Structures are given as structure tokens and as C-alpha cells.
Image (cartoon, rainbow, N blue to C red; front, side):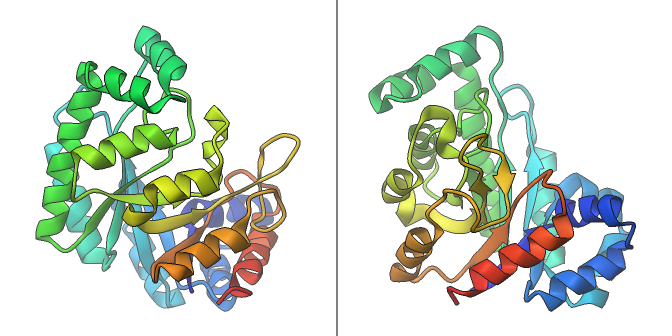
Length: 270
């Protein structure tokens, strides 16, 4: 099992503890974590991160970025995303293609839980279709550079990828597109992660290990919430998944301790 963690968590741990990024990256590496997940814009704006990661013996497992493909031509940004991944030695990138707003968003929320309804809505919505076209271009650019382009079940009611049927539709439109399984984001439409796994399992190329607190659904240290990680990991192993398991718990108190605890939990399943 290869572990990574969101670099954002290191930055939050710096704010919480007063320790330097370099100190925290050494702690991350000592916990058995091999790489970080990092935002494209942040990485391009902070070139010092490259040296800090190299010094700590950490790689980059995935580079993620937000787009507005439904309204804009994002081709140059896509190319920069892929080229940055090549430079970083990252084999995966995550594209968040965009969001709906206003009446379109409200209508999407009504139809998302039913597959045939979401298919009809998506195929008649111009912004959604442009997102799909943008993802076709992104997947093609990635394939040319041996970089796998993925989408995830992004947590937000305005996201067309918040439900498993929305994700499935995009994967059907873009054969080269792959899927990042985020274990904690199917709650918006009352879906179960194991049901989503069965629907999408053949396209899983990356995993975000997000756990949720039962009463509030807040993110918590991996292994301390209600997400059935043992069953998910066993299913991934059964289909020979050999990618990264990325620790994700934005905005928790005690990020440093949670990173170490999450890594310790996941390492039980190596």
C-alpha cells in the first residue's frame, strides 16, 4: 500500500503547531507516507515546494485543480496541468471540471438520485456537455504524456460529480477518463460508498481516504468514523489496485496527529 497526504494538511498543521513545513514533511515521511496530493495553482506559485519535497524524500502522487469547463476554454490550463505532472513525476491528475449554478443546479439536485433522470438532464444541459468535451480534451492530453486524468465524487450539491450516476455518465462519455474514489463524499444524495464502488470499480485509478463523523458528517481521522475502510480496501486489493491511498481530512483539529493516526490505521492493511 502506497500512502500520500494532502499538502494542504501540512500547511494547516503549520498554522496549528508553529512548526515549519520542512519539520512537518519529515514527520509525514517518518509516518510511512511517500507522497503528497497538491493543487496545481499552489505548486506553480510556490516553486520552493519542489525542493522541500525532494529534501524530505517525498514525491507527488496526484495534482488537482479546479476548472470552469462549462463556461470557458480551459485547454491551455489543461496542458499546463499535464506538463506539471510530467515534471513532478506524478502519474495522476484530478480535474474538477466545474459547477452548475442557479436553476440548473436546483434541477440537477432533483434528478441526481435516479440514473435515467440524470442522464436525460445531462444530455440536454449545454454546460454539462461542454464539461464533457473539456474532459475529452484533458484525457487525450494526459494519454499523450502517460498521465492518467481522473475525476472524483466532489462534495457539493452544485457539482455534477457529487453522485455516482453523474460520475458514471461522465465516464461513459470519456472512455480514457478514470476515477478517483473519494470514500467520504457520497453522503449528499444518501448513496452508499460500497454501491458506488460496484458501479464505478472498473475505472478506479486513485483513492482519497476520507472518513466522516457519524453525527455531523464532519471529516475525521481515517479509521475513526463510519466509512467501511476494511471492506473497501479488501475490494480494491481483490481487483489488484496498486495505486496510492491518499489521506484526506480537511479542517480537522490536530492535523499533525491526525495525519500520523490515519497513516497508522491504513498501514494495518498493507
